[in-house]
Image (cartoon, rainbow, N blue to C red; front, side, top):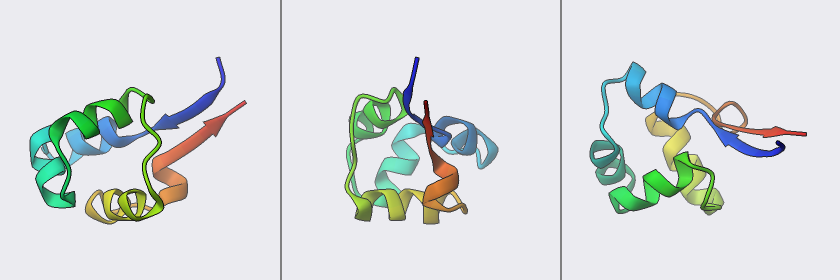
Length: 67
């Protein structure tokens, strides 16, 4: 299966953040984080930037396109 994958859950776990914690830090609802983690939501570049910044990584390392 190809498509966009994320490392959000992996990095949240690394920093002991819940979906709710991360959502509050980046200004979205917890459900948005759930949908992004499951690959069911294409977020804006601004949200991608904020997520990467909060998880101390880059957008390229946070979101991975698999062929």
